[in-house]
Length: 102
Image 1 (cartoon, rainbow, N blue to C red):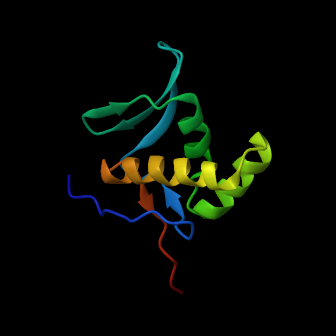
Image 2: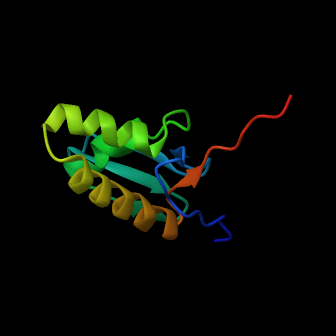
Image 3: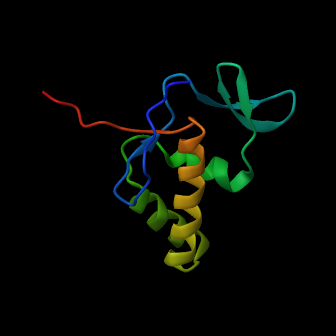
């Protein structure tokens, strides 16, 4: 798969690439990322983060939102979120929104 690797930072605006979809699998009762010839079943926290990856919010915004929700230290959440998103990007399950040019 020739996907564009990204380096995830707080400024990144991650989203699922066109070929991947986050869907709830009714049969298994779990969330999955469906991509050509691949399926990934992220854990509950990863699903929550992925649902925020809309290409509009920055990673920093996502971290801020989770910090408020879980009343946890921002540094801890930030480290975990960036590591998880980078892992997904390295596997081709995440890309970065590009600026639209007019």
